Structures are given as structure tokens and as C-alpha cells.
Image (cartoon, rainbow, N blue to C red; front, side, top):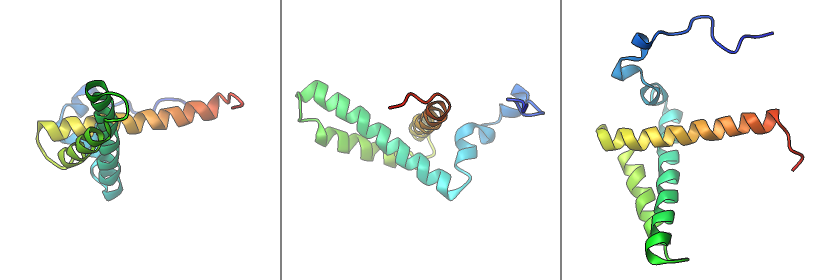
Length: 111
């Protein structure tokens, strides 16, 4: 049976570099950058929809959702703390969707 872990488990010192974090590794490809920007925009739009409906009432949060989605998309291209936050949240969404697909495939519910 195959092991769940790679044969070489990296030490924490190997991940201590700012250039070797998960976001930086994901940004190395053009497709990775596009996925990070898109997932950041989706996450920002979702947060904006929640905030907009909470503040303005049912059915009136669409403009806030679009505004926050575009804001997160723009922030994901910046190389500052806000850009890192936006990309980190976007990467968390990518990992969540990937994990959900694996779990749904492994544990079929019949639905």
C-alpha cells in the first residue's frame, strides 16, 4: 500500500522562507495565478454578499458583492499585506474545494 506521506518530510526550516510559502509556490505558474485571482474574487463576492444582505436587507446586497469581489480580485495582484491576505483566503478556498472533491469521491452518498 502507498504511504500517505512523501518519503522526505520537509523540516519547518525549509518552509521558513517567505519565497517558499504555499501562496508563492502556487503563484509560480500562470494557471496558478489565474486560479488564485479567480478564487479570491469569488471569496470576496461571497463575503460582500453576506455583508450587503446583513446591512441592506434581503435581495439588496448584490452591488456590495460585486464591489467586494472586484476589490479582492485587485488586491490579489498586489504584493503587500492585503494582497497576501486575499491570496491566502483564495488558496484556502482552492484547497477546500479540492479536499471536498476527494472526500465526495471516497465516501459516495448516493445523492
